Length: 166
Image 1 (cartoon, rainbow, N blue to C red):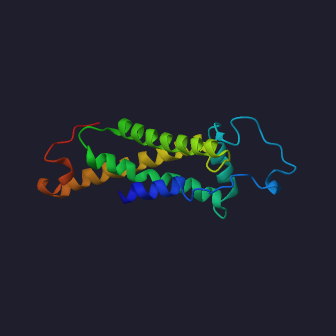
Image 2: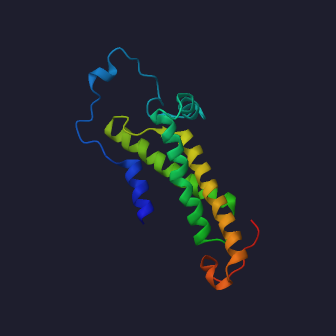
Image 3: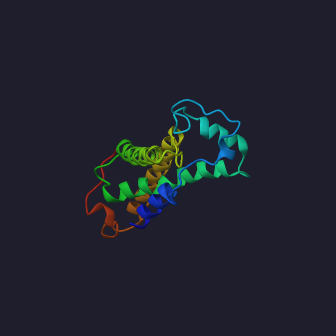
C-alpha cells in the first residue's frame, strides 16, 4: 500500500489549483506545435536521447533513472505474489499496463484542466517496462538463491508449490 501511495503521489501530485492559465511569459514569442504536442510525446526515444545528452548534472536524466527505479518493485511484487503463474512476459505486460494507465490518466487530467500539467510520454512506458523487467530479473535471481540456500518452509512466497520454468 505504501508503494502504491508513493507512485500515485509522484504521478499526480501536487495537483495544480486554479487558475489553470499558462502565464504569458511562457507563451510570448513561442509557437505551439500541433497535436499531440504539448500533450503527448509519441516519438520513441526522443525524451531518452534528450535526457542522456544533457548528462546527469541536469534534472531530466535523473527523471529517466527515476522512471526505471520507480517500477522495479512491480517486477518483484508480481514475482512474489504469483511465482508459479507469471513468467517474464506476463510480468512486463502487467507493468506496461499499469504504466499506460498512469500515463493516460495524466494526459486526461491535463486535457481536462486545459494545461499541460503532466504529459503522456511513450518513453516513460519504455523506461517503466525496463524497470519492471529489472525487478522481475532480481526476483528470479533472489528466488533461485533462496531455494538453493533456505529450507522449503522458509521460501514462503511459493506456498509450498514448485515453480515451473517460465
